[in-house]
Length: 428
Image (cartoon, rainbow, N blue to C red; front, top):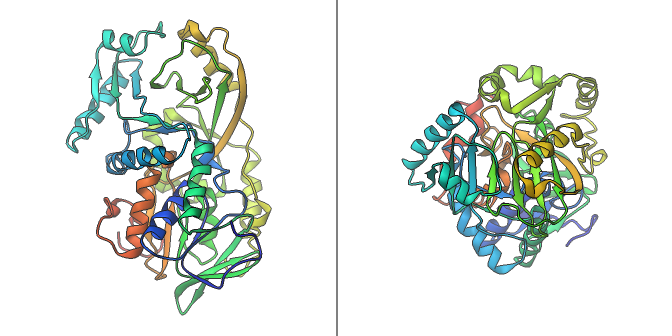
């Protein structure tokens, strides 16, 4: 792994952001024979890529993303043969509490089947067979036996080692301050340790992508959402499949404990960007408002003051944000754990081992941006995965690599363009 201050002069592709998307893209680029470097302001995979729920799922993916989810399955399976990071095909059980939720799952499955997807509907007796621990009464469920789970922190350690073994240069603790342009084309990244140049540049910086794009006047309509998770100490008698519901969600951990969260408890804070992009986000927010809480607090003023430091000819102090480590929503997690204990006697005496939170980069339509930037040839974006990035990360990286190299297999890239938002004068 390269150290800060040891930057080479030039690579075929340089990526800003060492999460699952950045590392996956770098790996597939390297496999196509390109020289590749990945920069991160801190440790690789430390932020959302290692803080997510650890689901490798297909159920309830947007139809546009479902091909990426399906294509990621064999890649996860291949990687699991190369390293130990807790990956297993345990299946995912998506439960409906009432008729309204069940109708939504049925509609999703009807649409998914047009793409050849093989999840199946379960009746009450079948739910009990797969989930005998639950005392609850469920209106219906979908089950996908091919879905799986992994330990995100271990997966990121594996992926970083795999990329490095393939010849990707990893440069940690090196904040990218701005994008450098020459002659209207992408030229390099200006870092706290100097300029590093590339024939192509990829911004894969998660929640920081918005401000990094701003350094060259590119508008990326991206907001932040915070989600909290707890983990239990190891216990006997819990469910084997991933359990997804609006009451609680959980997956078994490699250590025998469980990650537990509440799907409809994410928080977004009102910020200047919330006002700026309200028109773009409002339609999807109204559809998903049961899944999100909106809070108005000091975050608005804090971000208003911070964003003035970023942009063309500004200081762009990304080195001040080495880690994003928000406080978890302990009250919500306590309520969620109470529901789990109420529903499953096996968890009556479960001990909480820890809590944490992560900040998710979200787009107006909850689909990622996997795209070139028309205004600046050689500049690409891979961001805005809206809480779906871990499971679809491998195929998303493959898509990005193919997009950069001009390979035909790009798995529906037309759905993920920056131009679809019309924020930078492009035609969608």
